[in-house]
Image (cartoon, rainbow, N blue to C red; front, side, top):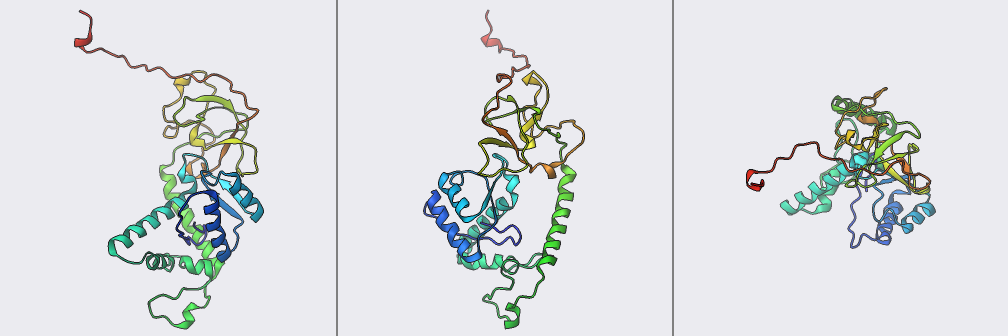
Length: 278
């Protein structure tokens, strides 16, 4: 679990990934740091269970679900997982205590912001290195750290958008092709746009703009094999910095406009000579 502002990582061992086991660990974290207002997950097990939904409701936590098959929508946690894995590997290779290495991560300041521990707790942590008692007192300005983080994110978006792909602008009740399952044929439907999705909403399918193809085409063969990598001409233009919006396709009261059609290959097939009839 990671705090979005401070990048502070909590690492807890789990003997089971059942909803009850995860809830118990989450309670222990919240008992230390307080109850968050919002929590972001991919909506997979066990976060899609009724037990977890009831827990969020009882504790007053708003659960945000990212689109399936799109880890970039929650890139910060994906990066945190990779960082923790690297620390686990380093601890195993060097024979060091994992929690000492984790402490080193938490006290490392960034170029323009304090360390994760200082951002979250308001003070530096005592380590094995000698330090003056005054260094352990709160000394930083939270708002200044927020502003530095915002500027860093703007700069990161600037570089990321240099390689952005033009994406279509989708409007409510537009006709689109989408895949109910990634390996299934394309389906054509109307959908209702929602900018956000929570567990309290009615059942629906969550997709990003990259997983939808906005077209009035009646031939499925006109749709690229990989719409996420294809460039769609639309006006006005949007870039990848805006694709985190989740587009929900209601699973109920939403009739399919046409049956899925499997595209036929247009490539000429020539049999080898040895298989031809004499």
